[in-house]
Amino acid sequence: MTRLSVARIFVALLAGFGLVACQGDDAAPVSGSEKTTVVHSKPAALADQQRSSAGKPSAPINIDYEILGTPVVGIPLSINVKVSSELEEPITVNYRINDSTSLMFPEAQSERVSLVRVGDQSFSAEQLTVIPQREGRLFLNVSAEIETEMGMMAKVMAIPIQVGSLRAAPQTNGELTSGEDGEALISMPAKEE
Image (cartoon, rainbow, N blue to C red; front, side, top):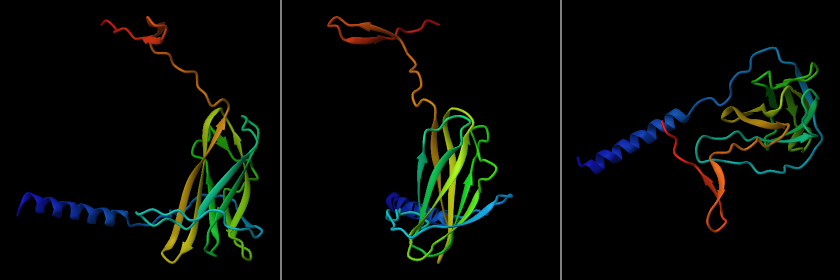
């Protein structure tokens, strides 16, 4: 065999291994003692088309959000979460905070919700509340699961919540000087060891 044919066989084997590795279960079971609420929303039109990729099949679910108001440390913050699907199956939505020093749920907030389509609606909406515990960029994880012909599928996203100032003070490297023609230059002399 020539080196070219050996290389082609190697590439074909790698592609086959990649396909086998990509197959698996997208949905992970949720454990814990979360509160569960069933929400029925009013009919509305689907605003977004399903996004697809050439790789692993994606869950037929879209998740959108809207942060209501300005996030402030210690003040409850409302977030509208809209979950849509063209399928008529119930969608289970889970809310999770990975860092309890950054965000927390109020006592009455459900962390797991089952959304059911009513009539010809194509999305369900829910308002949830979180309480920021510190300034900075914080994240609320949202996962939505739906039963499909291919089994249970899930879509996951992180909702970024910016508490406080977006801009950090820039760090200055070197010394600002002017060149011969008045152009601003940053002088960065070599350090002696």
